[in-house]
Picture 1 (tube, rainbow, N blue to C red):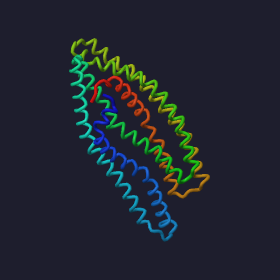
Picture 2: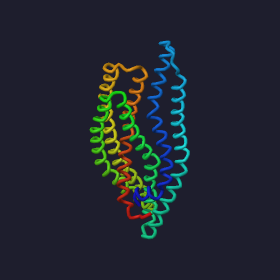
Picture 3: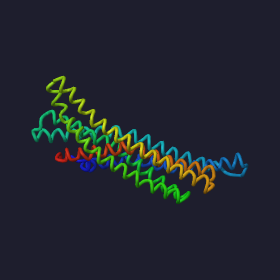
Picture 4: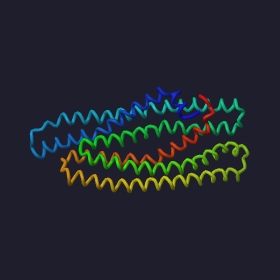
Length: 288
């Protein structure tokens, strides 16, 4: 059973949850623009004493903000029930197949437990992937409307970020295989009940997880330092060169921070993707 087979089987349920994720993300991406407009209107009204109608910008911002809240609320409401039922069906399928193939009971239950990584990916990582896409490309698109140079700088930085994460992925996939190999033996070890074997089992899990943590921290460090440099360059363009209004500067800074914050998910996303990829090769024989 591969992740593709799982998605095909539950495509309508997954699409239903993702629709609320998209609503939440899209509303979040466009919100800084409308809040920036509201900020400029309020400044013109109360500080510059101009005859400006700030009620309409305020109502539009409230509407966009509530769309974000609605999407987030419904996403969290339905994902728990849908993905819990999905795991029950997947685990049952894996166990039935393993039983037909006369796999040992320990391997049968271990693989059912490993299949939970599919649910973790769909429930937690897929929304993060969606957010990553919306935040990265949504922020870059929005920045084009303020200054094309700022958007170009953001696009350029995507290239080294992708390169760093590709190196991370290639190193982590081998470590994920070690973890899955060890976890497939856990029920067999527990059946024997030897204390030394159980201790050895858990120590074997520590080594690859520690190595993954090292790669994750290095990946995070390199990307954050790179983005700090880019942030300074973009901020100089926005404040010193273009002389934007306060509201527009707020919007630009918000989009830059959104672009930077979206990279926080990258190490976890890459780790989950490599885990699912390795699990695909391990469970591909279990047809849905």
